[in-house]
Length: 242
Image (cartoon, rainbow, N blue to C red; front, side, top):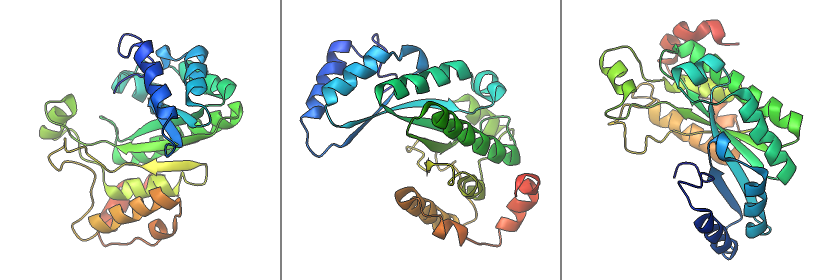
């Protein structure tokens, strides 16, 4: 599903019907919707919340990066910080929770700057949420390589390297104190195994530690990770590691 509040994509009548039906399912406690910023209005949020009754509504949006150049010139998102903050304000005014998606290592971004950019982006989300008094969280999305895409062309021409899992670990370690975060490791079966990993000895171990963190927000297993391959990764990114 694309933009839930785009009336040309999802008819208002169906949107209201879906909310009404969801409100009748006792085991559903929280409903998460996604939309581009330009389709969001206070009236639409209020309408959804009214139909959902006492269930939690969370509005999510792809910020991707707090860096204006990365977000709008590299990713071509078409989202201004003013537009992002407008969404946050509408959520505050309607009692709606908020989630922002942040990409880790978009095209043309180095491994070490990808870490810095992701951490800065999470800080921007949480600082903005505090400003408006919104309950917010961040979902980090490491970039993978889908077929028949621009980023696949870059990858095949050796102009893009897949993100190292140790960078995901570092982003988590430098963001978790600010608020609730999640690190997605799924490639949705689109990448032909071209997604974030480390060496064969520790990839599975790191993934399990990240999954544990996602479920618990406990940094314990993340902090205890170690492997010989970390040294090579560290030499590449040490300028941004605190």
